[in-house]
Image (tube, rainbow, N blue to C red; front, side):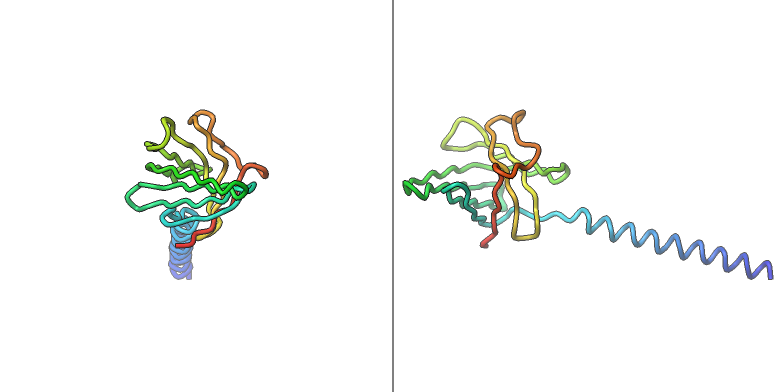
Length: 142
């Protein structure tokens, strides 16, 4: 009986370790799921409509339309996203229309909905938290 008990005990420990390993592997995959920024995103904040296009080649176009005056500003450049950090930093660099870069953070709610914080022109002054009055929701349209 001791032999059978020991055999069952070893099998139980092995089974528990196997289930625990599977749980860790699948739980971590879900936790580390990364969405991408590729596509066209639209949103509105304080009478400004925004349309951001992030391309797979790393290029981007930021389009700001003032709804009161109908003036339009378009910035083109390249973007870098670091998914290893929380919150996720985004840098818009090599902007053709300016001599500075733009820095912000992004939070993914799902594949087609993100929150973006107001831009900063300096890396050290970039946002590190989302503010209720300074962030906007963007929806992916394609």
